[in-house]
Length: 327
Image (cartoon, rainbow, N blue to C red; front, side, top):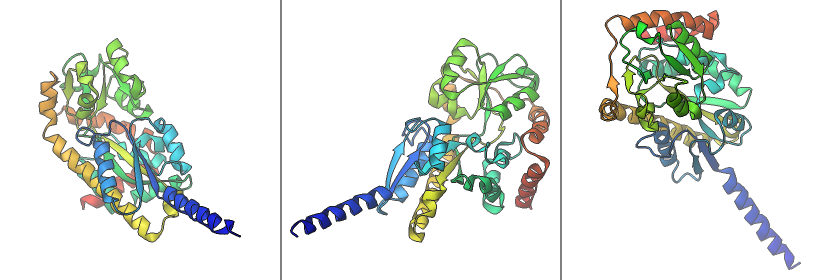
């Protein structure tokens, strides 16, 4: 009989430990855990700060500490990672409709894209197949300024300047864009980009300007052209099974933390926009503006790729959503 209190105490301790474990929130993201230089880390710190005192135990995992992009996506779908700042392209296999977020020259600005996401049903359409696989997209996370053209060889001021360059492509959609613009591309994983630039396998990439600065690629990429091709968008994914099991109060806390993280991310991008040109120039990068009319030429060439990314119904849905925000 004397053992019963001890057993009860042990059971109570086990329940306390289980409860503590249940409140753990793992957040995976790319880059260093430095909110001054990394836009994803800015989101994470905004998210963490908002949950201070709520009982959630948030742990941040930078770079690939929890696996590659695909591995992390699989872990989110299984409930092993609660929050993942992911490449947009990880969702394409299950939600092709999400490709509308990155259509080249489709959105005029990050603000327009944010308005479309906030005021229309496009996120519901993106999430419909994702939810069936245990994943929910809850926001867009920007990694810097809008996407421009970096290269190692020479200034790019017009479409024809791209002809002799070979670019690293993120995925098949970006490869199709590069080919439409009259250049060539090859799909290379991000971890192999530095080596590809040094060996000449690739002459550059389409990325926001801060990517080259943050990674030190400005050692090779000495030419940059601001094209504003599309917002430099990644996404915030959460485990649907985990989220659905939360209480209403806990859901509200997580929702608020996500909003705080997104605001911290937007504030970071706004602050960075005033510094990036000076940082590029300090790194010895030549910044070349497009000649008049050349961006319009690029946009016209790129428009043909929209129908290869989306079927007619999906493309029209994105067009309708954009038009409704403009009214």
